[in-house]
Length: 94
Image 1 (spheres, one colour):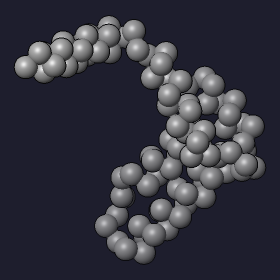
Image 2 (image 1 turned 90 degrees about the horizontal axis):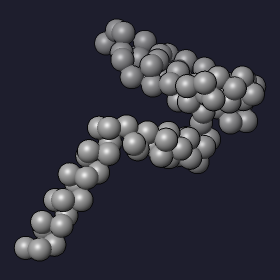
Image 3 (image 1 turned 90 degrees about the vertical axis):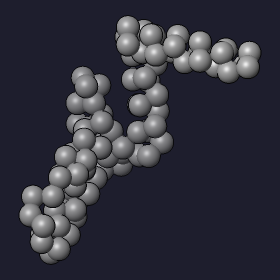
């Protein structure tokens, strides 16, 4: 029972730190590390998610085209892509 109360107290403290914004620098750094491990920048990941995430038309062929466009356009700004420098520079501001 003691460990459960200790666990709940820790969750309340972490939630309070998150709401107050004290964890924002750590969250940003963790996000950058995870994106770097995936070979992405914030710009390339954002482009992929925005183009692939919401389907404009529920047509199978159009969905495939939209997915390919999102992956290719996002890949331009990813690590090792043609726009790698631009993607990295723009990601610093986000």
